[in-house]
Length: 515
Image (cartoon, rainbow, N blue to C red; front, top):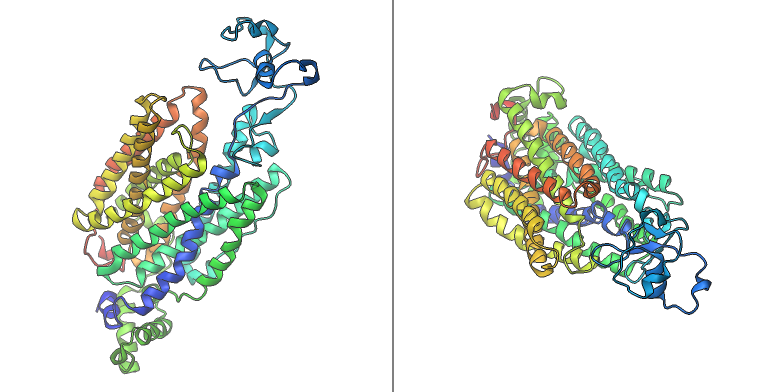
């Protein structure tokens, strides 16, 4: 007897499964509010060098003061990181002139002045993380994803050796009074949230039957998009970064409390030989789904059936991450999923953290990027069941890369066209992310599923950690970040064609099921 057969006897997809998915929606909503918090926490408004002794310019307007004090870019905007060592009053006679003498231009000497019309306070304005310190500003997101990477390794390992809920973390997030303190607390928060993200989707998937597996994966992913939109709303209403941290961190505590109610995966318990606990949870599932015939099934015979199932799948020993690479088919799956997850995460966060240059303010861009994800998921619900997981995974990644590449060649002045292409690319990147969660959870056997999700999450978080740093490459060539995101997405999409099909197939229980 397969576990899917046993699950159908308990009601398949009933009140029990609906309640579990409802409880899991809260942590799923809360996750993107931290994963994409960098967009507002470290947003850098337009700025220019602070001009000393402005009382000497009493007869000049502010625009004229800037004209004689700050050099301009070729497009006429004032530079953000340079100023004239002495006022250039001759520019008042002809504002179109550009100073030819580079020796009178210097870096900002007295700090910066920021435009607070959209952003009241961010870490970049509080600690002047601009110009030479711009790398530290981008590194804030990297520190968070380093924490998520560490958490993926730790909690992926613990979840396969112990009860997954014993591995649930509670991460600190304090009000930071220095950049160093912020970097530490964001890293610890990443570690904590990684454990939650590793448990939420696989747990929901393992309690539903084959017919509702795709629906469950898509529904869980929709809650992520809702979190995206709520982040835009929270950031719009709370524009001081300290209080924004409080606003998005508070619900984490409630999320973790909710997760403690959800029962362990009976599939996982059987694979680990914990028959009595699996029996108890399955009976609870049957009672809630009003399957009295199952609940009245003789306990002795039922326990014996579970023991036989556990014996069939009983592991020969402990499994570690190296187990993902010991057998040929599993090794190929692990290598390919690693590449795909890196490409999905790298391109997704590369697009999600680039909210400027499309003619919209950052709040509206964040909201629109969240909205477009929902129809993308709806389309994927149809596609993954029609054309399969493999084709869907490969082509969504390739199309993501093509959209990113298209915006490299579209002129900046075509803001409407660039916005449409960017929104399409964001939709494809979210479709790729939705598919990869569903696809990966179906590729690994139950006894290694949490290890597999931990490994792929580790690789994905490496992509997420590197994505914000790639923006610094624009100092080498303005379009180099987009070219990098495009190339990685297309290459990883091509690798997805090497993975096996999983459509309408039972979840593998042991390694022998996929070899």
